[in-house]
Length: 355
Image (cartoon, rainbow, N blue to C red; front, top):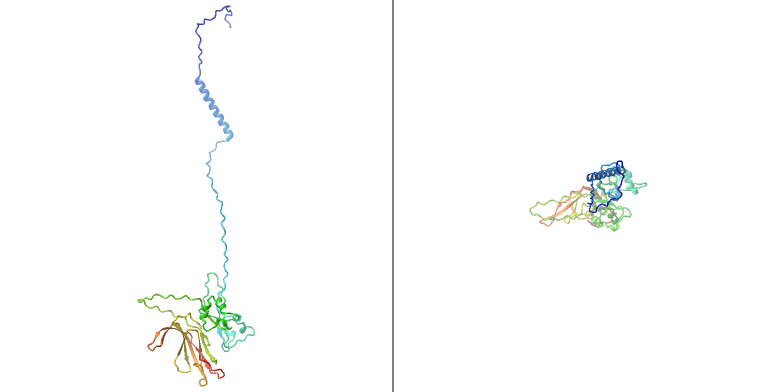
């Protein structure tokens, strides 16, 4: 170098071995090193944030995760089975029975009962139809309130009076009539004790009860209680002979409707009175609905004409008198009173007494 001498000594003595060795000490700059490390970490953090922001996009507010809703699969509800409403049949209402009187016609009978003539003809084709002829004492069916009556839901069925009357038509049997009115055969038989249901005749009149009666429970007697009177039955309806009729038959049947099944101590009392003579009223007692007047009441050659009135009442046996005669009290309202004239017919056979 400039100013330095270039002369080197040719011989130079080696350094003495005893000369002291030099120790080198490295000085580490710790502050600068730590500062550099922190700077590098910060730089890496900045680079990592930048890269993440480029990849993930801008930071969004995290949406809370929704709890999954369990969707139930709806169970198909079975449709209710449609039950068809049964078709209601018309309630049979029995027709009335009219016994033809002298001089009556189908037109006059229809006017009498205030029913349409065609309705009367429909029930009596033989008598009132084309070419038909009605005669006195014929039995005609008279419709009731333009029968049959259609009954709809919620409408109470008409309740006919008890007992109902039924006129036997061709081909009908006792069992068939009982089924028609929904009553038992035994009850129909009990209501018509004078009729043989196995040998019915056309135009024969039957009494049809309304149903099987419920037996009346016997209450326990209370000696301190006042006796409750039994309500009266309705008045019997007289069937024949018609009011004001003139008869020449050997026997005269008096017939009426039953009011109910009578109790053991009850019966019908027929009050029979001679209108052409001043004689006491006679009472005829029976448990049936028919009384036949025979020889004891019939006119004869000496007394060729007799006029009677009659009515029917239900009576109840209450005891006996000191002389042994039965005592009765009225158990129903009295029927309407009818009269008839019974004339002597010499050609007829001598009637047999019968009641």
